[in-house]
Image (cartoon, rainbow, N blue to C red; front, top):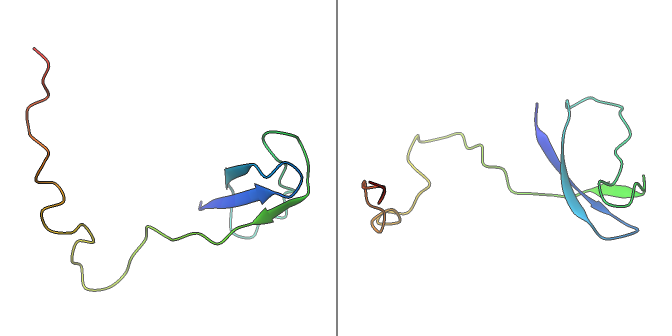
Length: 70
């Protein structure tokens, strides 16, 4: 099931909802309880294509394999 992003038109809260693509379920604001919400456009992390990584080279170079815990 995809996660959809919404914004409440009453309190401007941004929140996410996990729901099926053809769900007729009414979405309610998590903060104020309003049903006056709009689905927002968001970038997808799902990519199809060449199979190459979307992580820029060197992006992980600052990470170490040591956890720092003894």
